[in-house]
Image (cartoon, rainbow, N blue to C red; front, side, top):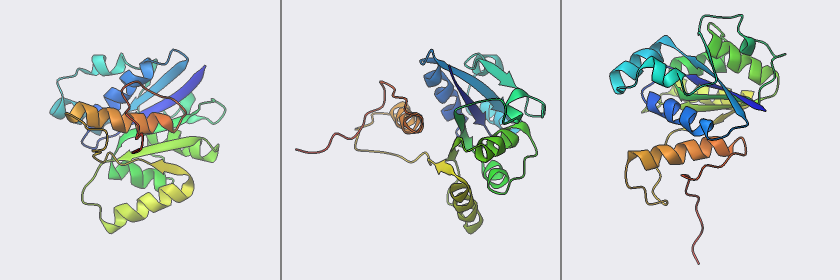
Amino acid sequence: MKRIIVGISGASGVIIGYRLLRALKEFAAVETHLVITSGARRNFALETDLSLAEICAQADVVHDEHNMAAAISSGSFITDGMIVAPCSMKTLAGIANGYAENLLLRAADVCLKEGRKVVLVPREMPLGKIHLRNLALAADAGCTIIPPMLTFYNAPSDLNDQIDHIIGKILRQFGWETQSFVAWRGVE
């Protein structure tokens, strides 16, 4: 059984985190541990019609962001890593600078100290110098940065295709493939 932590922080684009959880449900051998920040809960209400129950139902285990004694707060609890999607600039700053004030940040800190993969999906535009500095710090600490950028080579027809592509890129970091991901096939 593989274990993955999914953090959804308070950046715009929380639908990416929800859709990521749905994609991970397709893998029977993957156990998901979810942490949703209060900012993310607010953004779900502002940006979607999804209830908290619908969101949490996509995860195997849901942890309260304030429970610093949760299993995922310890390196002795083995996981395959963590994905933060979307990753707010506040969350990025906490991860990049080791400021583990909540469970999402602590779980990322644990994954980094244990040498586990951490994938961040930062949502902000334009990026300021402080954001860029924190992205560089996070990358230097071992995080993989996957900004949710538009793609066109896969001939997307709508926003769902764009989100599927981003999720496909994220999951490939862990060696997992989804049927909805359209990879570049080259030109003959």
